[in-house]
Image 1 (cartoon, rainbow, N blue to C red):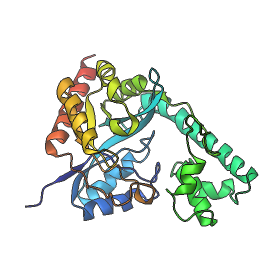
Image 2: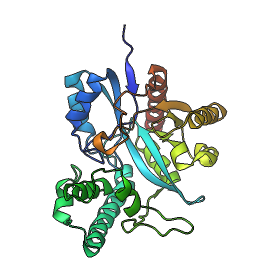
Image 3: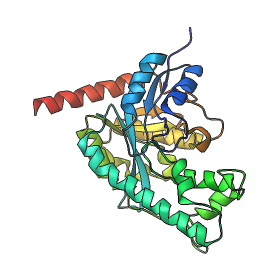
Length: 293
């Protein structure tokens, strides 16, 4: 008998995946996914639609979010996943909507910079590729550049050159424009306030391991061990931290469709039903705690 695959990290056209919710669910169903967390960046706008379509296709949707956050102490980015959050909860909206708006305005400025540098790109073209909520990400800008013949690969040399963050001896790329993200501790608090379970996403990718102890004290409850960007060493280290701090161990495809990791489809990493049960138990405990207040 085939096992029920649990994928706890997936995006849709409500953030930086060009595929609609229905298209994502159809791919998940083809791959045998029975439980799927929709974790769009900084928004829960697609969760109600996903729940309806999930019932249609026999996939249980775990309502989630991935908050683009920042480790203020170590000056590096961090992504915090939230599971079983209440869609459109005021705490999430207050924290995330400003990030979405800053990212959108940064994208507008980037398009202007590219125009001034001679690239054939219009803001209207980027908007056509934008999210279901009307926001433009760098992936949408790269798609226009590819349409206009400036490159033939969304993730190729042009993207690396334009969006390079800079380093000693190398200036940032023309299209690199940093924005202010939510504080990671505040992100954890907002997820907990929205009734959710806070989990650290892909700590190996963003070098977040050393902050885990502090974030556990702030309410972090889990850690993503298996992820397309993780090396075997990253996965092993994540499991060590999970054992040390009694964290729920999760896994997910981080599916972004054509904008994501080539070859990684929904269900490529199975978090397992034990992880799902642990998340449910933690979410139920949070609900009981809020009711008793």
